[in-house]
Length: 324
Ligand code: NCD
Image (cartoon, rainbow, N blue to C red):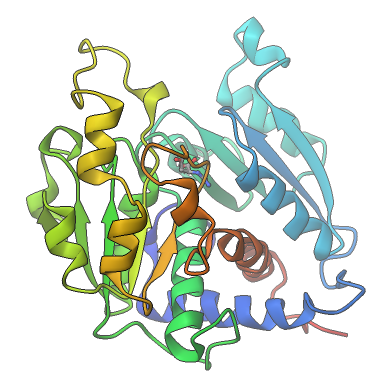
């Protein structure tokens, strides 16, 4: 594995290695001193051309926990506003010594371009590109589901454990979501059955080719008691052009596709509730559901650090021991 651009590029063995390495990283994160010397003095850069809170902080935290130096770039306030290109920006940062680039971009395919156009020769980690892929989010989601499946809590899952036979329902704005694309691929690679639930207006036209089931009826899917229910954010900032019209009104969306306390009750106590964040409380999820004991939203955030440590370690460490 030279880059982490898309779940498509991973074999089941690669995915398992990432998850198992993330477990090894997580073991070190309950210590009082969380920093590992394994990548000491190595340099990584975060290049964010789109806004982010948790993904950027999570990657930076992961790098620092591996004792790396972090160069932090965001398009806002940079020479991108003067028209500087992705290529020149990346080459400038690599010239300052960055040995890997963590990239978020509104254009689908931008990290792939960086990895394969010959502009720079360092590992590229995709931190979300357009509506395309968000591989580390899918990995942290799979990691969180795997832990709950095997231990009933956010406790270490056995090495090599998969998601065979479980059902995961993913509900909401599928059309604009890179999280869902990566998740459908990764969860099915690990053996889960995935059901996507959305209004027809928020489903892409090519979903027949996706390895999952499609439903328009959240209550019917909930009645089948999925092991995990993942709510996707309604991405209003991407609903420009075409005059809107993706759903009649926020209250109508909430009524048909929102997770509220009655749907939470129907789901049953075995299910975990997930959301990649940021949440629109009161739209796709009520505050009560978001804060319920079945919600694993903050665990997803903690696990994200371990997963990103694993990704950086596997791309950069070349077999050095994790914990000293
Ligand atoms: C997601 C993203 O940016 O794709 N957020 C995240 O990375 N945690 C999902 C979203 O923005 O809704």
